[in-house]
Image 1 (cartoon, rainbow, N blue to C red):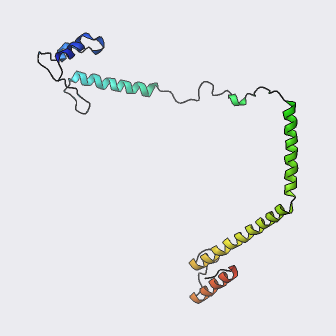
Image 2 (spheres, helix red, strand yellow):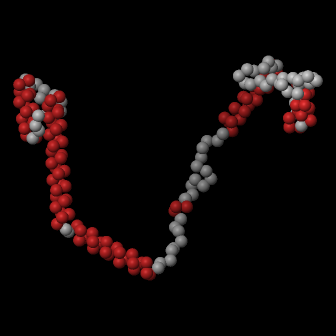
Image 3 (tube, rainbow, N blue to C red):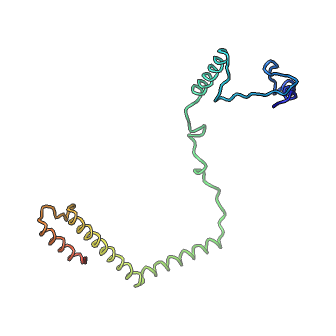
Length: 177
């Protein structure tokens, strides 16, 4: 329920001005009804035409007024990354310290690479790689023979020949059932 003081506010405040003919002002309290878009109020054909033409004009203005995307005004110029920075002052003490450290690191790396432990580990790693590769190939060959696919397929063999072939592959690979 809204009192008549609310209608007085609408009449005298310029930003909230609603024509007096649209409000029912009585001495008794009245109800203000607000219409949402889900339940439109009865409107005149002139109002519908005006609303439709405004929405069409706004849509046309957006569609026709939009420009294709561009990289901007400075799209052809180079970025700040291509500009060299200022030359920093060289401090002799830090320069000598850095050179000495680089020499120490290079000497330590050379000494470490020539150690027998590293050579032994690299040799073991190479052998393990070859061994693991062979084991993987054997495993897939046995699986292919059992399934009847791939290079080791036993397709076209009798069941007895197939069993002997798979047993021979497992024996060569060192696989135990």
